[in-house]
Image (tube, rainbow, N blue to C red; front, side, top):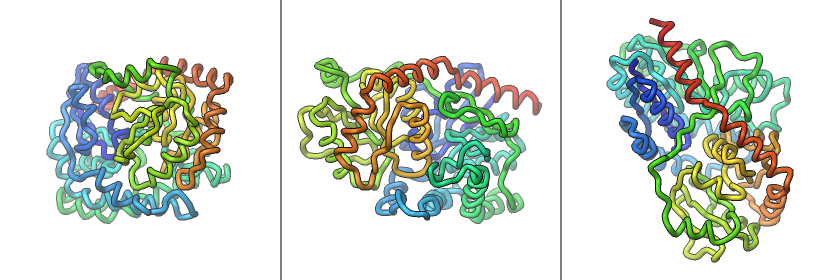
Length: 412
């Protein structure tokens, strides 16, 4: 079978889809990835054929989220929805053309992220199977609120409604540019409502999100889509730092940009209080002129190599980093910024491997210190090890491949 996998988002959004491509290839299929050019390095490591989509996610995020104030207030989700829709709407016409070009001759399109609507339209034009791939659960359910809302702000009886509301708001913001591209590029009629009947596969661990009982059959939890970076060799300086003393604390916020990195790092440095730590500036690009001697500044490193060598992971609670820290069997300290990060922070709290989140806008050193004390307790460390052991037995890629094969075979 031949598949085109389409994803547009941050590196954490793209890496699991690159892993899915690799798994499909190893199962004997052809698979190609389309994603933002800034997020394709992992696909290259896995020797997955890949082509960049139009746009620049790094510049777009920096422009949209700098000084946006998305962390506070009742309109937080609406601000985020407008920001991400501007990114998608600026590229939808190009994405649709590019997906059709590379998707011709495929048995199915697997679509995810901001390019999902363009991918679904391309599948309609090409008359092939469309399969959704999600890294957070957006299929409506009564069991939890939409990941785009902070969990504590939604009463349980409104859980299902919150999913429908979010999906409709996003559709409202996307549909004008999408329908224009459908007509101009494909001659397709305007789409009047959301797609809901296509298969949705979630690269999410059931140890963090159990499949809701009220989901339709077309929505499935597979397990985390993870592939180790086998060809990576750690720098000698990093290995030496790790081996020179107690396991360090990892500090990094991945693809987050447009926040006051200086203020947050100052609070963390004070809260770490002399403990050994590793700092990864990520997409923020912020590297202070001097760091205390207990901090080691580093570049990118595979989470599956680094996190098991750390005692705590301080992160933004993005879906990818949340799963990586959990699989490593180490506690987390979460600093959620926006979007689904509050959902994942809450999931980690529910399984007992993190405490109260750190406020990203007004970080306090004493809050960091309290979080470290909580994470270092024997009970929390034991729960983290148990969680990691459970997650390592989940083969999310194998399940996803089998479900994809069954869907396409059934269609044919």
